[in-house]
Length: 163
Image (cartoon, one colour):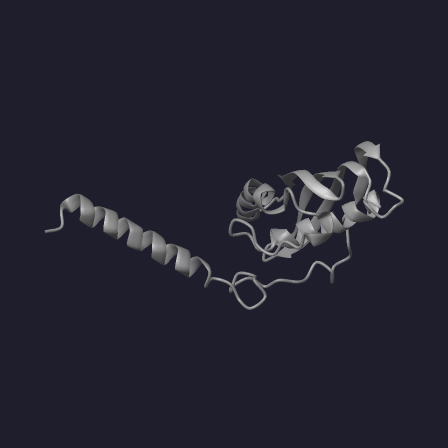
């Protein structure tokens, strides 16, 4: 006989399983939410602006070891959401072409965009820290698929600044 606690546990696990399965079904083929009208950030005028590195510890290795100078770099990236243009601030620390730290600061003005940017900011380190910057191409983090366009744009500006 199944006890009440076992029924509750089974019901909870079933609900979580269904929620996880449905979360993957909520996007169209491009990875954007099915109801979002997206405009690729590349079609808009690029506004990622790299700022000089806060610190630089070494130059690129002439022997081909490193492509990018070690240091901390900041850039802004933007993307188009259903509510208009949104912007994020990205800070990346590089060592030997590997991202050792990342900080994303939400700059959105729309409350929904702020929510998605905050979720993205909370989950991005687990996705990119420890990986080579040239291997980074983020498509969706913590349920946010549009913020990744601005993040990738900022990474491109950082790569240009660090090379």
